[in-house]
Amino acid sequence: MAAKRIVISTYGSLGDLYPYLAIGQALVAQGHKVTIAGGSSLQTKVEAMGFAFAPLRPNLDLNDRHTMKAAMDLRTGSRTLARKLVFPYIRENYEDLTQAVQQADLLINHAYCFAGPLVSEKKGIPWISCNLSPTNFWSSYDPSVIPGFPWMVHWPGLGFTVNRLFIQTVRIVTRFWCDSIYQFRKDLGLPNGMHPLMEGQHSPYLVLALFSKLLAQKQLDWPVQTMQTGFPFFQEEQGLPDATEAFLRQGEPPIVVALGSCVVMNGEAVYRCCQKVITALGKRAIFVGAAHTLDDKEKERFARDENILLAPYLPYASLFPRCALVIHHGGMGTTMEALRAGKPMLVIPHSFDQPDNALRVWRLGAGTFIYSTLFTNARLKKALCLLLENPSFSAYAKQAATIAREECGRETASKYIEDFIRQL
Image 1 (cartoon, rainbow, N blue to C red):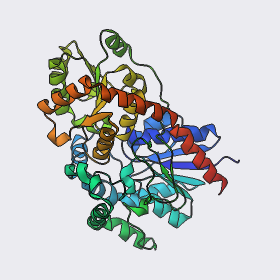
Image 2 (cartoon, rainbow, N blue to C red):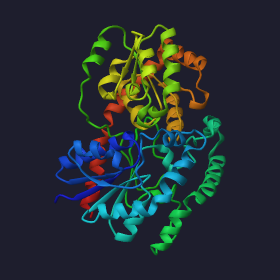
Image 3 (tube, helix red, strand yellow):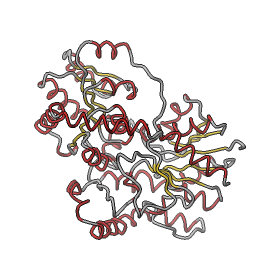
Image 4 (cartoon, rainbow, N blue to C red):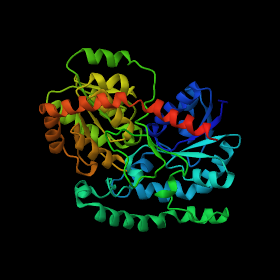
């Protein structure tokens, strides 16, 4: 089969980028030429991995604390992202993606790159859509937790009809969010199309569900062209810094606090709470990313505790297998790394798919969760004691690890893409 020129669009944090880098690696190994299109903050990482890079607006600055705090708000974060950070820039997004695919044979599109369907319709380029989370399928059979509605942990038991009515309500409310997209479609001479946040994000040709069957399995109301692959783990450089290795050898496996590249910018309150409770329990901990986040005064206070290590970014695939449990924000990448390592977890969800991922981890029996808005010392202590003292969490996490390792999401996704290419 002749080599193809493939553009993979992405949007968001490193957790959004890494699965696409994994797929890109597999496609390059098959002889294809792959370009990653994304925000400028991702360029250094992409090019360091040997991929061509195409800039794609809007440029979401992950170091902008004010913006990240607004986007991660449990109640209003999704609306902020859509109405202020993404949809107003649909024209720029379209212009950049059109330029990126000019010589391409195929577009593989991130769910939040809303110009993808427009570029395909207008330019005639075939495309595959990807979803990293069950939330993007809006299933009435397997409903997801919508950020801002914590009571939805009880929602799945209410049945198909009630679930469907609720989703229809969400459809009506969020349609107004998409006015800029509908207007731009009109300007391009395209029909209104389907709801951009719902059916409109899915390719009519092939939809890849890039998540594990541990979290969700294909439902009757998913697009029929959906193929579930398992999570595509990115094969990053292994190994840990000498300071981390030394800390790990000094005592029992630590608790790892890993808040993700978005949440970490506003993680000081969570760090302080975790440090206080973990120390009171007599446990050791590694705070990933805290070395870049805390101010000098906070760093000095943490450094006085010999059972605490403040670390820069560390490869989770190397770190998580050597810890006792993981405290994290519920991003899909971190969730799957914890499951692959077979470690119980405490999830502190903020926004987007995180509350739903947290609920699905809890259903697996591999962990529990505390919403970011309800996070207190007392709740944290209770949750950590539960996870450390109840062996069932570790047992279920180890069972999940076996499945996560067997799914081979990277290879499965590339196989479906190869099959699609043969039909072009």
